[in-house]
Amino acid sequence: MHEHVYDVFARKDRGDPLAHIGYIDALDDETARVYAWKTYDEQNWFEMCIVRRSAIIPVNRTDGPFARGWKDGHE
Amino acid sequence: MSEHLDVRALADGERAALRRLILGLADSKRIMGIRYSDWLLGAPSIETGIAASSMSQDEWGHARLLYAMLKDLGDDPVAVEHERPDEAYASLDALDEGFPDWAAVVAGMVIVDGALTVSLNAFSRGSFEPATTRVPKMLGEEEFHASLGSAWYRRLATSASNEATGLLRRATEAMLPTTLAWLGVEDAAARTLVDLGVTDRGSQLVAAFRDRVRGDVAQAGVDVDAQAAATRGWDEGRGRGPGHPDADAAERARGDRNRMLFVE
Image 1: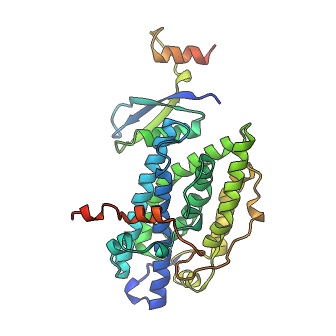
Image 2: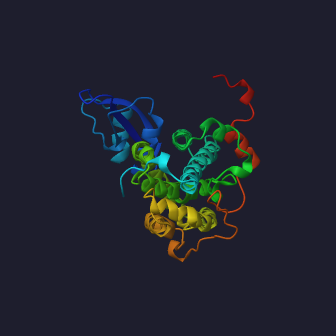
Image 3: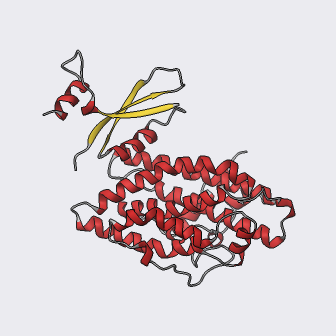
């Protein structure tokens, strides 16, 4: 079974910018939701969301984890 | 359901019935937390272990809130939490022994945690005011437990490994009969609680539970509608079957080992 990398974004208060707070590995979206919420539960988040790294489209970089994730997902 | 219950006006039998329900839920949450905690290390991935750790904390938090409700009945929650013998624990039968493998943990998430959530859901809509205010937060946290349980159940049930599927099916079939008995009880205490508007009838709880788990367990070849409740040796005092949690779990639940270091 192949695991995917999911990047985790959250904001503490309604007006805060959404910030990248980390990543988790999971087999599917459903388990990724739980792992993200349970792993990054040190704050009382107003909002948390996750994105499969392969869905992030790099704009100006051709290196780094997001560019690699996009390449991996489109090969 | 109806208006809030006046706990001070309850007759002894009514008070005992409410105490039984709260203790059954609280003890189950506490032992469930211990069973999850056994898998902080040894779960299939780091993320899963962290989730088990967090779920264990959730369960202990829920247990603490439920034990605190006993104050409304004139009980001392500290004595209840720390001074009862193993035989007095009213936790679900399926939690008496530790989960031997990850498939059993997953079955426990779906079956045992699922049954507790069904019971808590009815309790939160009933006439006992502390439950209407405190239980909804628990149910919110339990949504993540259910989500993880369903996802892992599907993964194991549909895996290419006959061993994984077999372990999952056997664990599910072992847990269902006593869990159905626990939820579906319609003895004198259970009828009293229905009359007081505290919770739903056992048949309604069982129907809700079957609806909840039917799709999950069918993936492992288990027909939840064909499973019968195991009511033999029913203990009306505790609202469960015969037996009790193993000595190690009860000792950990009470906090015996380092109790002398407790400072308040």
